[in-house]
Image 1 (cartoon, rainbow, N blue to C red):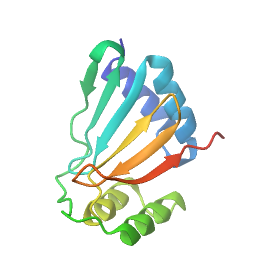
Image 2 (cartoon, rainbow, N blue to C red; image 1 turned 180 degrees about the horizontal axis):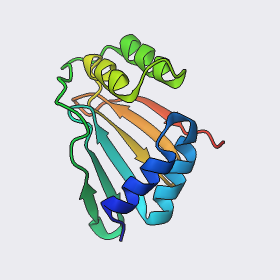
Image 3 (tube, rainbow, N blue to C red; image 1 turned 90 degrees about the horizontal axis):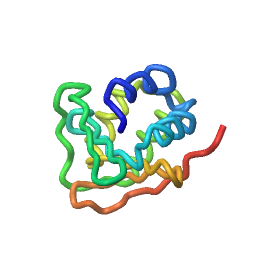
Length: 130
């Protein structure tokens, strides 16, 4: 099964918006079926076959996630990041303030789904192949 070191190595090489599709495909090749990334502290949980699960340590100081999602604010912060106008932490702050609790990436179908605290999907994005 996969290790956090293998995931970190892939993230070091491909962990940017420009190489997202390659990143996700590399995780799939390791055996990651999907992963959840949480805005509260930036940790991720990776899931593989047979119930295999790994969790990364927090990536940043705690952020408060708004209880109620603000859809327009969420889309604004996401778009700013996609355009390269914000760094990861700035995007994370904006998404948390807009009520995004986490995103889930499914490696097989190349989708990224953003959820609020109630578990309601706010957006499902197809990850575009480069």
